[in-house]
Image 1 (cartoon, helix red, strand yellow):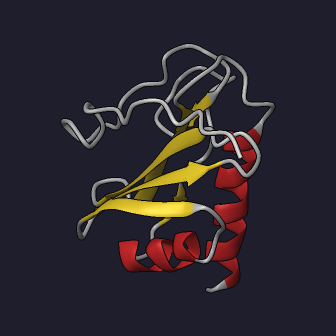
Image 2: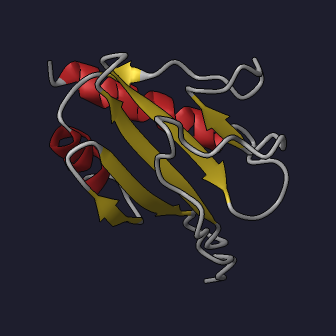
Length: 128
């Protein structure tokens, strides 16, 4: 109906074992953040291909980049077409999948990014 997609960030990915930090607005969560308002727990270590299977079965999702240890997907909201950028990094040193989920536009996401990460976590854990 509407399309508030914004511009795809060109600075995502893994840099020295880290995903991009959250911008300090309440529309981003990250397992690598030290800020309690942004912090989510990392996902269990599974192959990125398993994360991809979960993501592909979620609505309005587009896989943008995939490697053996990294996955970047866009999630689009149903009504307004807002886009969230979601990244997964399989960290071999910590044996976890770090995750970052951030809205491109606005300041608040009404908890959507956190809820999405927890939904993905539950689906991954149910496959074990």
